Length: 195
Image (tube, rainbow, N blue to C red; front, side, top):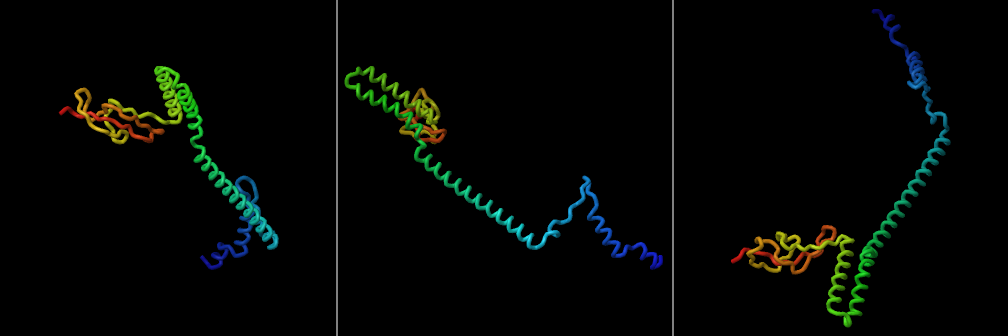
């Protein structure tokens, strides 16, 4: 091939620029012609004014976000303080009826027969237990169950022919749990094999 033939096949610089310009104005897949960069049509002063407006808008958004976060933090602190101060309000309201029953028993105690006092005491205890159960306090009374040192406190061991070794023979003092968390272990007497 001669040098003249190679020059005809290679495009010149003017042709390359024309092809690039043509590529910029080609139609996109959905039929739209791409827009030329808007910044090229604006003067530097207009670009600066637009950038300043965007910066002010972003600063205002930032200040609003900081204020909202501060308000959220203050509200959370206030709610936490109220929860600490008034968290037992429901339980206290339930216990008021128990206190009222005990006051009535004390007022009438000197004049009432023993059987009536005993019945009133049982009713007051049931009322107290219902109030505690309502708030997730459960009784741990493990008589006859295997001894569990996580929930039971052994007061002593006693030989027994009837109970299996290492089971709870007698509950001296019942234990309590609050929503599965131990408040107080049950104090128990544990069975051991006879001597």
